[in-house]
Image 1: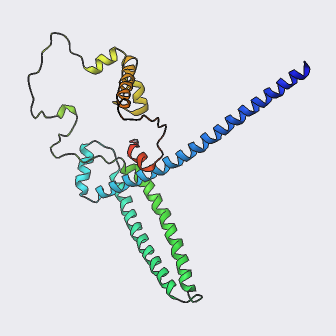
Image 2 (image 1 turned 90 degrees about the vertical axis):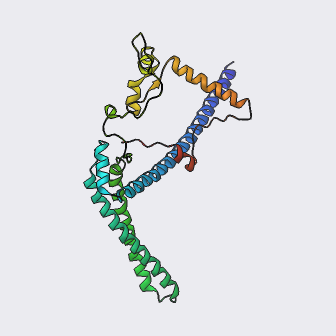
Image 3 (image 1 turned 60 degrees about the vertical axis):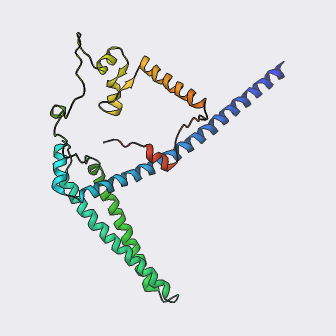
Length: 262
């Protein structure tokens, strides 16, 4: 009986080792996938930040007084003086960088025309231009990182007819129908939902900011039921449902990603 017990122990150890190996392999695959997605997300975010920066710089090329007035009317706190100073440095550095790149291209073209061994002068000049360009590109990146937090605070341009101020300054242009009169205290949908425990504003505000909410209890179940109903209707036709855990295609990720305000 001892040998049977020993065999069972050995088999048990092998099973544990096999299970640990599979778990370690799955963990390794998950970590590699996570790092890949993290790198792609970082690259997408950098691209989006560059696009936001370019849009802000185009906006700043317009009427400065109009931009300052729009910032004041929208009650946005942004240091425009510092931003315009950084913009001036950025454009000056970018112009110098373009000049050096043109010189590098001319030097490469000239070097290709001379005999081998006679182009040492062009080779040395090419190295010098390469080092200068690399240094200026580093300075450009520093300026971009300094400008982005300020540019991202620039508000959208308000319509000229839009009233300045809060909700109390809203102008009613026209009304349709007659306002109903009730014989009981009227409550908003927000008050009703909160009293029934259907929404959670406080938790959502901590995670996503003001005016966001989480559906809770019966409201959350209702939303899931509606999604389930819609999926069943779609799959009953020609639609094939796919469970996409993550989106890694860069062009798709760029379209769905949302940058936080801060």
